[in-house]
Length: 409
Image (cartoon, rainbow, N blue to C red; front, side, top):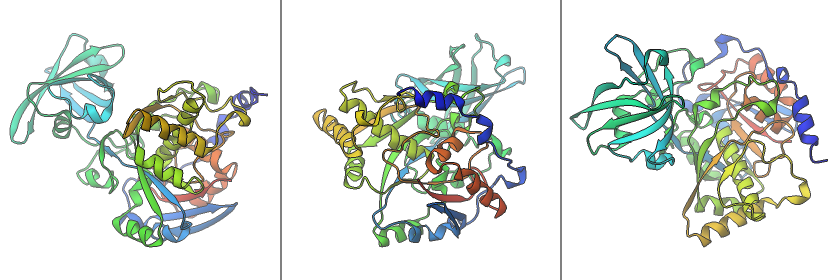
């Protein structure tokens, strides 16, 4: 019956997705060089240990690697009130004049963003805050005020033609994950960024990609392994633990994703061995399939994937990966679109059937997080054995930690 998935999800015990992570196993800094990290390889129930430099040798020659080329912006800023209180603002999502992150980076003079606000009780709704920043030698007065107090929407105002990205780079600092429990340092501007980062807008790095180097890319090319890119601007919600009583009650964060027509072509050429680099790439690719389902079924042309949309379908109702991707290609060609922007809050947990992705390159995630459920959906109960092996073999965990290559069952 169609509601079997719901009963199974509601019966899922969230405590089964916790594990004991000693504080000393959290990597506060990355290894140098980046590709010297450890690599755990899981395939068909077998676990092997290697190093990331050996990744190309452990991928089939027909693999298509898909990377998330988002770039972390210095989204955390501090403002000093005349009373001495410090207000922290962390940019999350643009609201006005555009919701499209790539476009929001080019706005001039003023914009509105949804933010996380630290010490909000000391910032009254009627108060404005200001600071001076320097862009290309010009001193700019920046003012911030509430656009919507209840929704944590903040208006930023500057009276020059400097684009917002320039303002952010002059104003803010890279927002490290809270579990690193340290201040941002100058070196994080380089180390908390992939070497292929290209499109500004993320609050957090797609950390599975931090291990890649130009040398690794060269060796992948020699082997004939293809690579392609999408853009998902990672939000702060990626660190949000599950606090709901059941899986289905957890509120998933929505993230903005951008796909090019060229990526669709690459995927259509190889639907058999698609391996995303990172959980953000995986969630994006699986969301892309479900967008194709909506087009295939003539439901809508709006790219918006709700968190539980994939689950109620019978298998016989769904198109193949090729049919789904072809529906997207036809729509983009009809509308003369070179790229398409969507929103996804897809929630992948055990019981999910993967439609495009055959494996995953990823780091080690927080206990009880949605990303642990995603890994468990891919490898089943073996996720516990994988994490125990990593802990027993001194792997480093979380954003600056070691890597794994996991093949789905």
